[in-house]
Image (tube, rainbow, N blue to C red; front, top):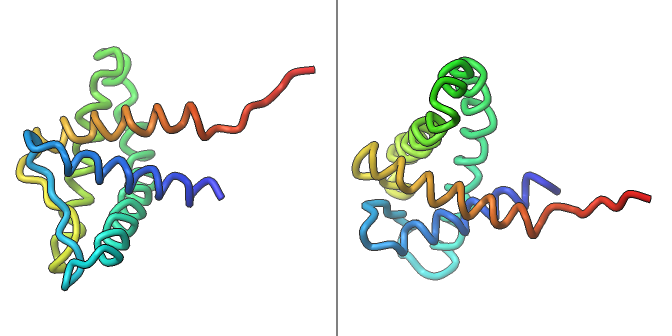
Length: 131
């Protein structure tokens, strides 16, 4: 159940990022681009981003742990931007998917996605009560 929530939250966060006109991040939906195709495109891109984050992101975070320590965690912005850029690269082979114009716009978009995921995590995590 947790992975489905993560995919939906990622899709929502990517949708919010595409609404910000200053960021050069877009999603090209399936043809003909009706509402359900757009929603399905966001969900698939959210799933790909979740898988990239889970598989490659975990390895990158372990390998770059000393850099995280030295930069007090700011290197996570670069790693998250790279993962978003990698998601865009993986989906560019089709005529639909995520498009990020430059790596640095991907870093800014990843920061916005991280903030949205953090806020959603506050509300969607189960509350554990101590007796």
